[in-house]
Structures are given as structure tokens and as C-alpha cells.
Figure (cartoon, rainbow, N blue to C red):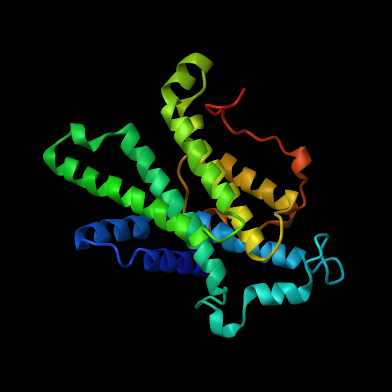
Length: 255
């Protein structure tokens, strides 16, 4: 899928200067193996909201005109190989990098390599450095966007959930896997919001419902993009958020 390839290239470019070479290779391998669903959904969301902005006779409910949509996309000189504007692809890469860093952190927290053989411990050292770099570079790419606040809240929520994961499971009877899946749910929402604001829009209830549906389906592991994101289905996009129940597991700060 071209969108996934564009996201992977942009994510790789964002960490191209990481040193030493062994650490760079570790990060590159992580991105090579990763599903690009968060990044691809960001691009799909931007395209969907840009289209919705032209539905109402050339002007959206937020006053976003067709001319604004054209300007937000940039001209052909600023497009990636799949025709996506470079700026939006960069934002998509930011979402992807944040997710990969947090996913790696979660894996380390659940299965500490430093308690295993020396070889695994060395991989653990690379992994924790890679996780920090991935999140930091992702934040850098989103820092000047309207999605930055949501990115911060995603990381904060992840930290709270993982810190109290065991206590929540024991005291509240919450399935630890459901707590872990809050990360994927929050990242998919981040992807939708990042894509929408990239074209000057607020994500529609229909688009947020798509993110919820995907989160319900994927759990704690994103499948390949082509297996679950072949375009936003009209039937899903037409659903109202008011009719959609959020299944986010109880967080550490939920009442």
C-alpha cells in the first residue's frame, strides 16, 4: 500500500541521523517490521476530511473552503511519491514514531530483557534507547501542529495505565490486555485527529467512529495496513459518534 510505504520512508528519514550505527540499525529494523496502520490512518483521515470539507457546496461547517483544502495540500512540488503532501506525510510519521516508541516501552515493561541472558540484556539496552528516540522524534514532528496536545495526553495516559496496570487488574478486575489496548485505541484517535487538523478540520464523529471500530478489532497488535484499511467505508463513516459506545478500558485516573 503506497500510503504505508510513504509513512515508513518518512519515519526512517526522521531517525536517519541516529548514532551509533548499531542503534540506528535496531531502530530501522523496528520500523521495517512495524505495521504502518497509525501513519496510514493519518493520511486516510486527512483525505477524508478534505473531501468532507467540500461536500457543503465548497464550504464545510467550519468554514473550510475548497481553496483552503488545496492550499493545505500544497502544490505538486511538495508531494511525496504517492501524491500525498510532504507535510501531512511527516505528521503521519510522527504518529507512527510515537506509537512504535510506546509499544516498545510496553514490551520492555512486561518482559524485562535484563533478567535474561547477557545477549538479551544488550538488546534491551538498545530497545530502551530506541523507545526514547522514537517517541522524542515523533513529538518533534508533531510539535507545531494542533495535534500536539493529543500526543501529550496519549503518552501521559499510557504512563498512568502501565504504572498501575497490575493494581487495576487486581482491584478493579480489569483484564490487563484491555488496559494495554488503551494504547492502540488512543493512537488511532491521535491518527484521526492529526490527519484532520492537517487539512484545517476537526475530525467528524463518523471518522472518530472508524477509529473506535479499528481499535475494537485490533486489540494490542496492529495488522498490516492492507488487511484492515483499504479506504474508509461509507457505512462506517456515516455512523454517528453519539450512537457509538467507547470501550476504552478503565484508566488509572478514571473515576
